[in-house]
Image (tube, rainbow, N blue to C red; front, side, top):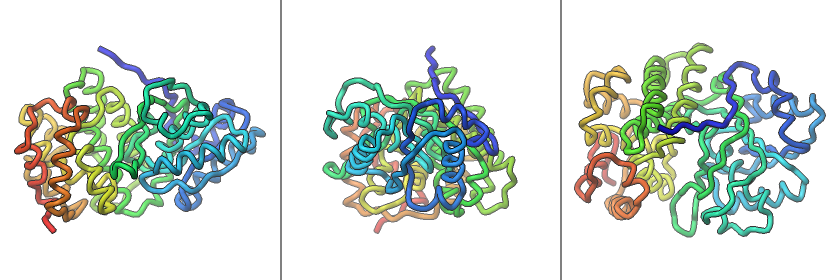
Length: 362
């Protein structure tokens, strides 16, 4: 048995301002990393800036993180942070800014290294990272992973270094501003983390404990993804579920749905959570040993009802035969994802991952 979770996590309304002293104790100058709009619109950026100002900590802002951040953007932010004299990094937003913040902190600390260091073995030493999630999917606030886009390879992959945030400040009120499509996509990503962590060769009693309680919590508010109006308690449940899912995959990694998702995301721009979700029904169908318990935890009668729910939430994604072939070939050579999968995988099994009412041919 093995369990390691070094991140201090708070999930509560106003937790950024209420924990300003802990936030500000991590360094002398902060680099705030975020996207262009959402952190400004939901109040999270103002809360972070207010907390730092109240404690007399200067900061600079890099607000150019794109969806599915690239290595090039990480290096640009690294140079900006070092030039500004920052010595800790605060990521605000969904998985893209949170993941980017980890990679940026690593490269800021190793300022003489080139971008190739991101995917080389070497020191994991990085400047302290703070995560302020404003979506409820990636769980990046509780993982050591940083998924970046590698344009040269036309895909996405986590960096080779494990960087846990020192502090995660999770305020569920930030979720209220999310469009339904974003809330649904990110929440399905969290569900994918639970399912891929539970159906996994690396699963232990500890990781399954997180999945079991997390799936119960997720299921209790899954109607929000269909448009039901949510309360403060509901949003807190979604955010807590996302964080629990992140803790789970920190110990197991993900498997086939996440690996396959990178292809439609890179090539056709399908949002990450949606790209994961369309493969979940087939993954559950293939995992016969775990089907019954997962369906029970998620409160679905059978795999057909589960697939119908996913389709209702996400709709249908068109994937060309050419992209299917590329994804199948790529995944059959992805030893890391295959090693995590607890059932035998060959070309037929991989082709079967595309047999879903959520996937159509172009």
